[in-house]
Amino acid sequence: MTSIISSDSAETASPTGRERRATVRLNILWNRLRRGKAMPSMNDLNPDNLPVSWTQCFILPLQDGEPEMFDFVGSALASISGGDLTGRAVTEISDNTALARTLNAVPAVVASGAPQIVEGQASDTDGGYLLFRAILMPFGSDRRSTDTLVGAITYKRVDS
Image (tube, rainbow, N blue to C red; front, side):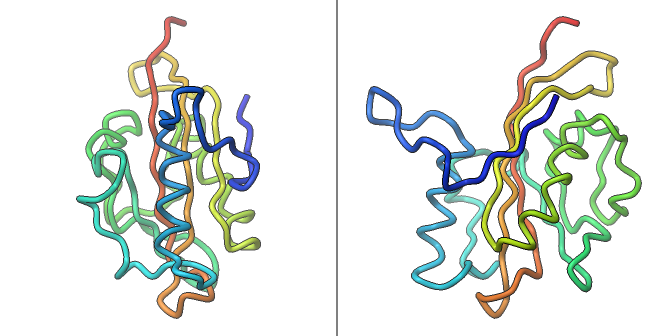
């Protein structure tokens, strides 16, 4: 089962005062990068300043509001998605992977212009299962309309 959670409904702090969930920390960063605009531009994004490893991220440009080919898929995601999908079509993703389940949020992100957090269970390429949390964030070169999506997925393998 996969659930999509609106980013504005996510809790922002743990009892210790430091948020541990990467998805929430990325949502906070996305809001900071907006600087009062509808959304940040890709020029605002510095992979070295992310609260997760760039190997857990992907970049997906949109053509007429639809995703077509990945510009980048990090090595950690490639390892659970059947190989490096950089430069490949989104239609090449296996259906039950964390990446495919995360992309189910594309219509909501494009329609709202806001990040969406996705969490659930997915298959890995070794036939096992993963529990994952992901965020899909919109970016726009004009800072008003979405032309690129950036996502990040954290996961842990579980016994089947």
